[in-house]
Length: 347
Image (tube, rainbow, N blue to C red; front, side, top):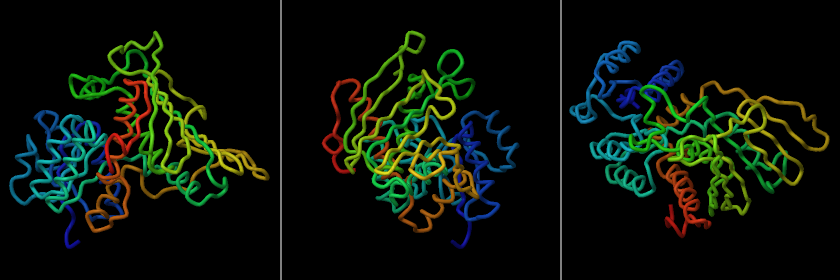
């Protein structure tokens, strides 16, 4: 690249601010991308956040930011229901796009985004940091190499978010758990992270069967409760997944339990235990990463724009994650298993 990619951050709430911090972190070692402007429809918040980060150029709408040659790429960190329309607008304007997860509300929306990127010769990428976490990269290597477990025989994953009081978020983030504002329940909001990690570790999902359970204490009767999924991977391995807004899995009660021909690994985001003959089962740490998973998202996005087609979490990849989430919701409603290819065709 002759000059840094100039990025517009659209939506400067929690996610947009996290992205800004990540780019600041990345630029200490990689200056191929920089923030050109902030975009937000809340003038007071926009001014306050721009001042905090020293961003001089601001706009009240994406359309205003797209006028003129100021930007090369758009970072969409807005409510999920706006992702498709904003992404297509930016892609049609010839801008590369990185969009927060979930990339869209359903597979059809994601497909329209991918088609817009292809039609305009630009890149569509998803800000799915879970894939870049050290424990996911570690487990991916374990599965791919067969060391030290041998071939995987089965696995289970548990992830939970139990807030104090009523399930929801405060302030500007309240929309996240309010469907009428474009929010969703935990299966989409948090499960999209979990399933992105599962796909990164075990590969594509072929078949999905999900059942739901709610405790009487879960006040949000309008949202799904605990979702228990059985995923049959394309490899034939079965992976069970629990995604719960009713249980916060503490210590090593959550995370991954991976079984293989020679033993097992219990892995959380912080550390892992190895249960193999002749090995000390004491807690071990993962290799350290020079960058946070959030900064790695933007490094890989930049690599993708720079021509690296081998990167993870492209639009095409994360449409597959979204398909698992959508199929899981449909499986819960119908009481039947959903074959991904039969339901969505080749993704």
